[in-house]
Length: 74
Image (cartoon, rainbow, N blue to C red; front, side, top):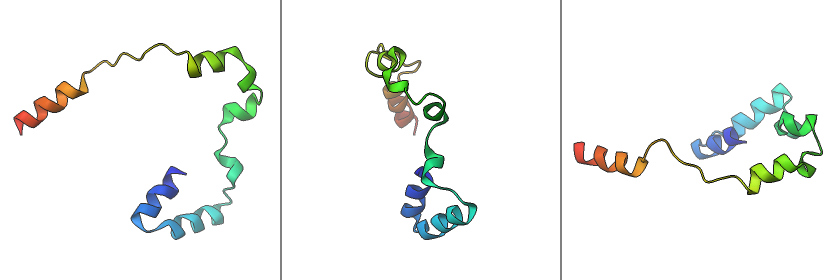
């Protein structure tokens, strides 16, 4: 789907859609494999804890500082 959006922005969405159609790509090919292997994943504790109860992410780099430094060097 990202390829179709990118192709649309480039003005070649019809060509990309036609390519996918020729290759036999269907909507169900975009379903992630984990959903196919475990269709009841929504009812598992791990899904809910990883989706809504995940601890805060601590980035390894301070991108705001790096961006400010790169502007100063330019």
